[in-house]
Length: 61
Image (cartoon, rainbow, N blue to C red):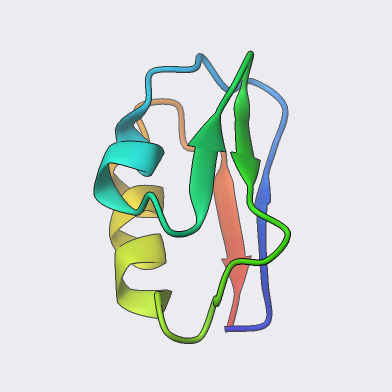
């Protein structure tokens, strides 16, 4: 996995950080951790993107 980003519109629900705390962190909105191992967590990232209630997680394989 090359890239993961959070698009505008995050509602800070915490679903992504619950599914994949190794990559996502929720402060005022959700963030992708700068030191996250995207390749190692690719399946969890895809699951988090699928489960996001507002569909703002985007990734590039």
